[in-house]
Image (cartoon, rainbow, N blue to C red; front, side, top):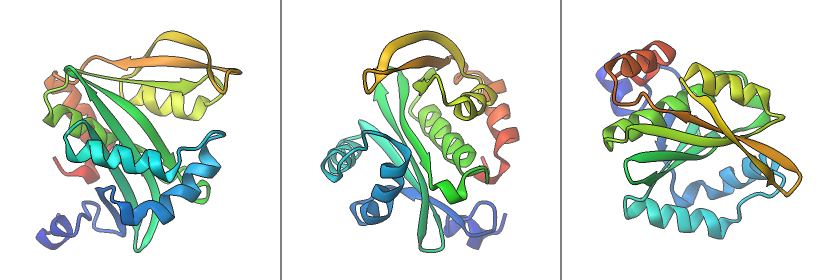
Length: 180
């Protein structure tokens, strides 16, 4: 990877840039949020999360292609673990590896914080996301009944391997563009 690509955040040498979420991204993030979730977060919730990010309690990223924000994702840090709060990609940009890139970046952020595990909830109906999470080593650990809008169950998934060198190798294999 070239030094210029690394400085520009373009680990893949192409147009996809991963950078911290900022207030200036909200005009682009909110439309993705609205089409991704039946009960989308408000701008106020995102601003609160950004404030917690400044205090080191959260970690949020956006994926940009040129000036277009095409996805975002976030983590909440909880006593040695990291919880994936959300990952969303613009519908027209799904199945292009953007969620994989975001999840790899989030996993590296958790490792950098010495977290030993990642956890998340995923809709029972979202089999595509479940498949992605399984490739990252997540396994089902339980079900939260009626978690989404009081009508759909969530599968709770955990990845407990973050501290293992083999997990870092898996991340490098899944997403060499991250360049670690």
